[in-house]
Image 1 (cartoon, rainbow, N blue to C red):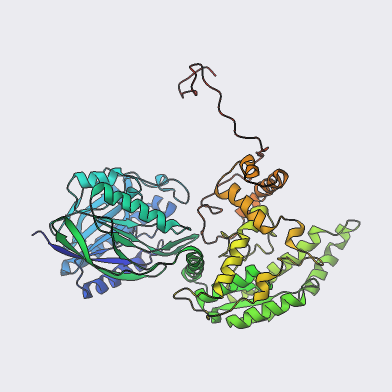
Image 2: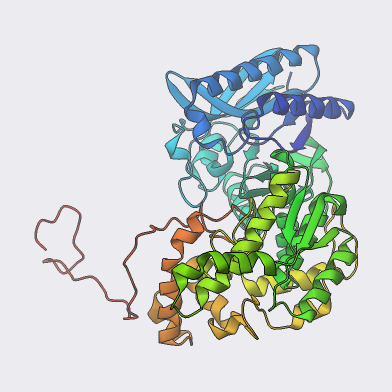
Length: 576
């Protein structure tokens, strides 16, 4: 029989990489929820059984076998006449491993489709572990011809065109699409293009949750064949949603589905950092977190994010003052801790620093005190915080921002100590903006208090590491507004030095910042993971060599030499 309507459930829920049994339990719980609202079919996100991205786990035969066995076990559940299931898993066929999406119905695996376009850029590395599948035709479910383009398959026209040309009636696209700023607009534009080209309605289902540096924001949506919005699910929230699709004169149309507002801009950035921190702490089994609260904006914002993620009872803040710590910083840190409702302890470090100086005195005799002695303070603080972490099991949150990590303005084995950094992909001025935002905005699901939790004085005083008398960050760095603009050009956009100078930056400043950026690569390799917020984060997106002698001298771009025929050299030309 050919169905004239379909109730399609959308499991926008979290899965955990490698937790096959837990993911299967989540499938069964979601299926029960979908059965209660009469779903014919329930969709899950890309590689849900394995968790996404599974990376090199896919190279382990035991892992692949466990995923396949779990899929077959879930398939047997569908013999009860309840909702059929669409679910992703790594799938081995003829000795090749595919990123697959399977229809489970009538107690068995009814059909499987393989991902065609394997992304191999930015955070994605799928060509390393998967084989590309053939162009997909539709599957048939209740007489409806359903196309299953998997994630990247809708970012180019060919897979969807193949589905449309072979009789597809509706597109159901499972995704593991990580968050970065502005990503939701990109997804919508791509989906609209595929719908207009094919004339088919589309369901875009995205996973939600955190995996290491990546945050998946959900925000699943649907489009009718005329590219109007059919439904919109929330961002950063798990849900099992009901959508109803009815066949009309021009194909299937969504006649029922939720439409909610999703966070945008700085609100989305903040929500992503909170979700990423919560998922990292909870999935790794930490009872809570500990962090140093210095009275500065970075640690204050980290404390607020930690409380929003975990609740105040799971956050422990320590002030670690030394002779250069100002009374202002002591007051600001205490006010922030009280506003957030966290445990707050003061541990003076003067005796410990003095012990280090005494121990090193014979070796350092005759030298001038300087940066080394300043960094002892930071390393003492790092050691104390790590001791508290080890003693009580709480994870140490590190609080450096992207501006500091870019130029090496951080002490390795000191303030870089920690297990996770929610600010790692936020430049300093973005930290200020999000801190100000938090005083007037609380993301949904947050466990922290509303209102002003970061004292105003923290937002207006000049940033300082307070490692020497009257120290300010701008003693050794350009103003952060200027620094961040240069770094955005060098890191996010890979701009030439000459282009930044043409945009109004000082040549020598840009060259100095570029040098600092390259020299600090070894520090970043040893830094804690942190939430990806921008298009190009340190680590998964930006993979630079540690040993790197290239420097951009600032010359303008030069066109390549023409070949003998008056054109650029072709790959087959011998003469240069």
